Structure formats: structure tokens, C-alpha cells
Length: 485
Ligand SMILES: *Cc1c(COP(=O)(O)O)cnc(C)c1O
Image (cartoon, rainbow, N blue to C red; front, side, top):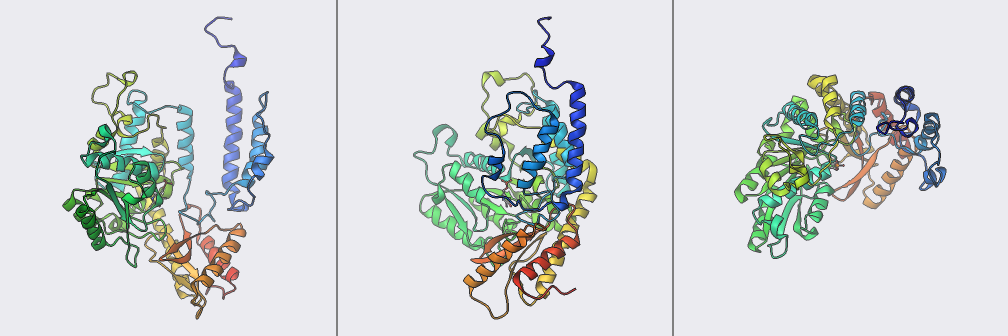
């Protein structure tokens, strides 16, 4: 054997075998998508069952693709909660759309790491272009610097690190000791990822002010001002406000223009968390939700939430990329390159390695077009509105929040029954029964202390009949009259 050749039996799967396996996997994927309605949307399993069904040790000798796929069917599929099921209406319903799946397959085959421009120029440049497309589709400034991360949690952490550095305390060099206590503001309805970012950044829970919200789940800007005043008087150091566009429980929209005024007055970084609702702005009639966001220092929105892109794909935009560089740029000798003028994505975040996530988002734009995306978002909002009106018309159902987008917060509330503990008990039981049906999966939350059910439309195959089915199941599980025809 020539010393430059790898023994064939020690190389990867041979080309012809790969082609055959690829065909099998493609068939598997297509069948999964076509037959998904027959599967229960919420996994009907118990903790530990999947672990027990799998062997404790890996095989010593390789096995053929048929054997792996059989186990996928027999062991994995039954223990899946199918997010790509049309009956998935829990949390924020999402779609791993066909073009997105195809894009994910291609980026996997490339298997590149975009830490530097040079380590895959197309990765960096396609990412920048696709994020400019996305910003322009939402009516946001295309001059913003965009980067793709895995999740909104990471995007917010990275943005708040830049914000901390921009506060001018030189935490990067000195660390946090002997610094004034840093304070971060968000509404009581803000996502827990904001708290987690503050924990990682050393603010501690005491460094987070959760500002009460009004009846529409919007941050009270008057109370924000008061809190900032109190912190300044106590020699603490306010540094950032996180405004939410589309809160996780009720999809409330914080008054970003007024919050931006407060931030400007006090020199605070404004980060907007639009993880779910940002994509709604691709349809012009929902642009109102992003009013004032052009004044933000950073903004996150997740294509993997409501832009039909397979998880994970979060878009982080900033008007101040220099602040990110100041916080993160750190170039060891082995990563120096001669590519002057190029953007090296590792300079803008704590992570070095990065996947080629832009391909799937690119394919989503290429397949649907911005008009097609807007029509689909509009249709989802339409389905949500229909559900909301049926709830409003029903004497034993009650809506607990405005339905701005495709999420409806509601509960069973028989007339005359006003004991909150009893209402919670009834609705918990309704949720359990509805989800046991396997047809739909709803989630719950608490709004102003009241337990409520949550229906979210976001899957491309969800039809009016599916939403209708959810309503019928709620009524039958609650033992109340069926919805009006
Ligand atoms: C879902 C959500 C997040 C968290 O998103 P991940 O991408 O899972 O980290 C953050 N903020 C809001 C408002 C959300 O709805």
C-alpha cells in the first residue's frame, strides 16, 4: 500500500453506500413529514423508558443504516414530542420547513467552522447578507451588523456583555471587584434568559430590576424611571434596559419609543428581545410592534421561532458592533490572518467555532420569498384571531390577554365561579386531558397570578380545523358547551 493512501476499510462510508443510505434517509424524512399527523404530538412515554430501550454499550462492529433507522422508528419516534406536528400549539409553535431542512443538510455536509473569515469566507459573507435581508424584511436598519447565534439566550448574553463593556467601567481588564454594582432593567414579563445573562455576567439576581407591567403586559415606563432614579441615588450603576417585543407568556409589546427616550437620557444600552414577535414585522401590518426599535443598541429575533427555520437559528443585530469587539476581540497568535478588511466573527462573541447556519435561513427566504413569508405569518395571526373570537363568544371561556399575534391566552371560567385556586385546578385538569388526546399540544402560564392556557399557532401545516379541534377538546375536557358552529 502506498503510504499516502488510507486503507479503504479504514476510510469513511464508501460513496456508493453513502448514496444508497442518503436515499433511505431522504425517504425516511419524507415519510415522517407526510405521516406526522398520525403520531401523537406530545410524547406518550415515561422518564427512563428510552434509556432502558437502548443498549448500555455501543456496538463493537458497525451496523447497517437499516438497523439504525429501525431503532429510530421503534425507540426514538415514540418518545418524541413532535414540534413539526400541525397540532403543536404549545410554547411558541415553530416550523422546521422543507427548505430549511434542505439547508441544514447542506450545511452539515460542508461541515465548516466560521470562526474567521478565512476559515470559510462564504459562511461569514452569506450570514451578513441574509441578516441584511432579514432586517430589511422587518423594516429594520440594514446598516446594522448582524450575526447568527444558536439561541436568543446566547444573543442576549452576548449583547449584554457588550453593554457592560460600553458602560465604561473596564470590566474586561479589571473584572467586577471594586466596581459599583451594575443594574439591569427589564419588565416582570421578560424572558428568564435575561436573568440568566445577568447571572453569568455577575450582576446577580439583586442586580436585576423587574419592572411591573400594565394590563396589556407592557413595561411601566414611569416605574422604570423611578427605579433608575433610586439606583443612581444609591450609587449603583444602571447600564442596560431589555425591552421585550412579544413577551413569552402574553406576547405583550413594551413601549420601546419611550424606553429608548429613558435610555438616551441616562446613557443606557437598549437591548430589544423580539425572539418570537420580531418576524411578524415581515408582514407590514405588524411593523408597529417594532416601532422605536431602530433606536436600539441591539436586538434579537429568532428565525427558529416564527420564520420557519429549523432550530437553532437566532439573529442578533447591533447598531454598535465596535462595542462587541471591545468586549470580545482577543486574537491569539494561531488565529492571526492576513485577510485585512475581513470580518472575523470570533471577534464579536465569546464563542470561537460557529456553524454555517445561514444556509437554511437563505433557503427559507429563497423558497417562500418575503411575500410568501408575510402571507404565512398573516395566516397564523388569522387563525389565532379566530380562536380568540370563539373564546370571547363562549360563556364559559375567558381570554386573559390581548391577542396581538398568533398566541391566545385564555382559560375555562364557568360563570359565577371566581375562586382562583379552583379555576387553576379546573384548567390544569383541562390541559392534562387536552394534551393526552395526542391531537394537540397546548401549554400554560400565569398572568398577573392567574393560571391560563396558551395556544400558539406557528406551524405551516396547522389548519383552521386543527385550531377548531383544540377548542372542541378544551370544551369537552372542561365539560362545558361545545363552541358555537
Ligand atoms: C423563546 C424566547 C427566548 C428564548 O429563546 P431561546 O432561543 O430558546 O434562547 C427569549 N426571549 C423571548 C421573548 C422568548 O420568547
